[in-house]
Length: 130
Image (cartoon, rainbow, N blue to C red):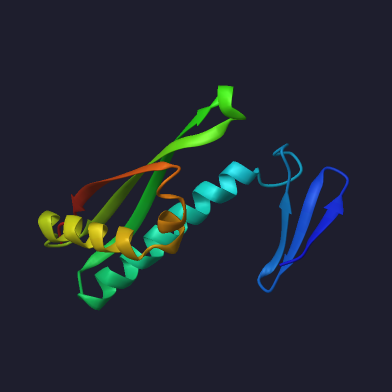
């Protein structure tokens, strides 16, 4: 991965496209946003694979991420709460929680930061009738 200097930050050329990174969100994605998105995105991707493999009937998966940062420590990320919202039919909440634990153990991004950022997951099941 190669990063290139630009006036208000950095640019990364990736196979999918260009990514602008800046401490000012008028000029690009802020580094903390990318870190949270990579943790949430990795976790969701692994979770989705598990749900698909088990043929769980879900229509939608949404992740809400809440971030706590410490201004006294260079605004470091202290904790991330990932709320998984699963919408579907005949959902087994116990099974969905177990799958979330398996996803956590297999998410490379969570495993990379687990000793420095407190990551908590929760689950909301929304049953769809029809």
